[in-house]
Length: 414
Image (cartoon, rainbow, N blue to C red; front, side, top):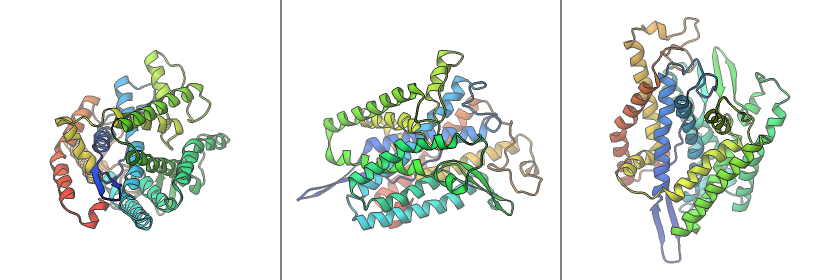
C-alpha cells in the first residue's frame, strides 16, 4: 500500500546582494500532484478489488498485465514524495537559518509520527482501540525528517556522501539476511532499521513495521542535495542537467538489474512470455526500498521534472492542485475510500457484526468491514478511483488557495 508524503509546496529563494527572489517550482508541484493521484489508485484497489486480501497483484502465476501495472505504477509514489521532501527542506533552508530549519524538521517529524500513529491508523482501520498500529510512509517520512534535521549541521558534501553510502550500501544487509529462513522474525530494532516485521505488544495489540527507516532516510538526504541543482542552474542548462541525470539513473538501473548481482533481494527471471519477463525485470523490492527500486522510480521522476514538468494547460493546472496540498488530500482520500468501502459492504447485504472479529481481538486488521475474497473487478476499482480524486478536487483547490493567501505558522505542518 502506498502512502504519501506531507511535503509543503516548494519555493526556491535565491539570494543576491540586492534581492531575495522567491518562486514556485511548478514542475515539482505537477509531479507531486501526478503521483498523488496515482497513489489513490492503489488504495482504492486495496479496499475494493476482489483479490486485494487473497492474492498479490505482482504474483506472476495469477496476475494479469492490467492488474500488475495497476500495482506497479504506484511504486513511484512513496520514493518520489520522500525524495522531494528532502528537496523541499533544502529550499526552506534558503529562508531559514540552520538552527531554524533543524528545529522545524525535528518538530515536524515528531508531528508526522504522531499523525501516523493516531490519525492515519484510525482512517485505515476505523478501529478506535488501535488493535494493530502500522508504521508506514508518514512514519518513515517523519523519522527521516528528524534525522535530516540533525545531519543538516554537517557540510553539504558530508550529507551527500552519507546519503549515497546509505542508498548504495544498505542492500549489503541482504547478504546478512540470507542466513535466515524467509519467515525469520528479526529483532525489533533491526526491523525499525531495515526489515519489515510484525510484533506483539501485549494486551491483544500488535505493531506492524512496514517502512523501516534506513533507506528512506538516505533517499531524503539525496533529495535534499538534489535541491542545489535548482539554485545553481536555470533554464536550458538546468533542463539539460536534469535530463542527463534522469537518463543516467535509468541506464544505471538497467545495467545493474541485468546482472542480478546486487541492489535488489529479488532476482528477475525469464517468464512465460516477453511481457512477463519485462515485468520480472522491473519488479523490484519495495519493503524496504532497494537500490534498484529507488533508481527505477527516481530516475524517471527527475527526467519528468527536466523535460515535461513545465507544460501548462488545463490538465496540468488540475493535477498541480493536488501537489500543493498533499497532506490535506491524503487524509481526506483515505477516509473517503474507506467510507465508500464500508458503504459497499453494507449494500452487499452484510451486517455490522460480520465486519468484526468474533475472537475478542477487535476489528479485523488492517481494515474493518472487509471480507477477504469479496469485492469487485478491476474496472470498478478504476471508476471508484476516478470518483475519489475528482470529488476531492474542490476541497483541495480551496485549501490550496487558502494556504497561498494565509501565512499562519500551523499551515506549514499540514
